[in-house]
Length: 192
Image (cartoon, rainbow, N blue to C red; front, side):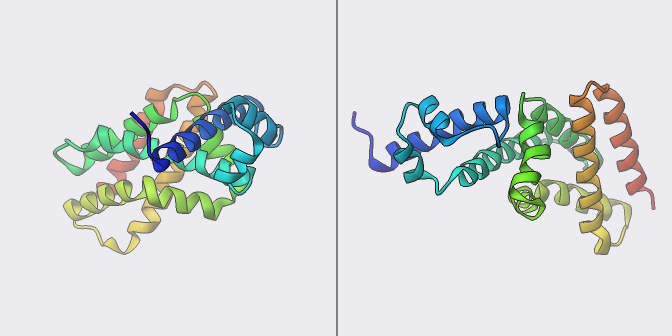
């Protein structure tokens, strides 16, 4: 069965992204050259540049895919929870599960902001995971009779707490301690 041009294009993009991800994680962005990526993907540099404007655009695509997978993990873990508090806690566990994928913390929390800039990373997060967090907090605020005026601020602060926790866990800290601390933060938010 012959593949369409669209299918071939998507397949090539995915091959390039997989090869680039492996190299970005192993060597870092700065130490990874486009000829290496093309070689690892089994294509020419011309093919790489046909699909991505430059190495930074390829890196951005890799980071966006990682963020999409994190968002999917959060949603899958929290979608069937009956109350706002438990949904947020399940979402936190989904986040920590997703961030445990080797290399993901480096790509999303260390290299991503340094290479793409904080604003670009915030845009990517907004597209993939921020909505789930805001929806959960909105439900928690509503259940606790809280004013929604500070929803964005709380979402930003809690997101930063999740990221710092993921970095600490990657460095060897006990995940259960961070899950307990996140629960305490959420419970503190829920108090009237």
